[in-house]
Length: 226
Image 1 (cartoon, rainbow, N blue to C red):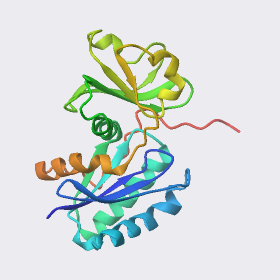
Image 2: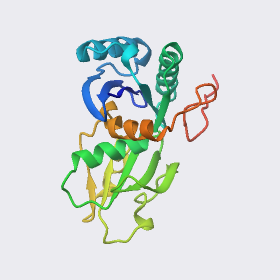
Image 3: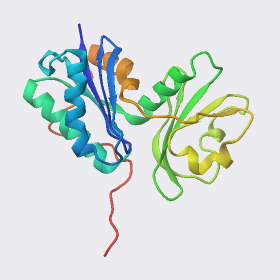
């Protein structure tokens, strides 16, 4: 059996889960905003206890690699690396945007949707976004986009149905209303969305280099002067 610990810290709250052969066994979702450092380790311990699986029984650790919260991504990746180094486990890095698309497809099972467009608020009028087809194949690569019109709509046939979801939809709700658009409300980014992606990566041997892997920020970190 293949047990994978999945860590999602790209958003303001943490999410941790353990999957067995691609099926989520248990998930723990944080409630405190922007407290990744304080919550993550206890959440991992709780999840392992609830599954009755010691960390030593894990086959790999999967982590959301970004884009998203700069601090959250750094804490999530460093935690995942620490577990992998300590237990000699492979590290699996999964795009937050792909994971979000997998979750949206799961929520919309049975619906007629041609493309999936995750949107993460990147402040001001920017969003992190990408475009995937219903098989999660990348159509447009992840980028930080200044929104002036409906993202991705010009890139596909006007008759095709496009689903939008994620924190970036709030600032764009007026733009996204349309007959061929669907907006997923109350969408949450969960670590369990990685379960299928993580087992596929594990079987394919798509492991990250722990020495050199860094979060995928998509745009440079900057601070304002005092």
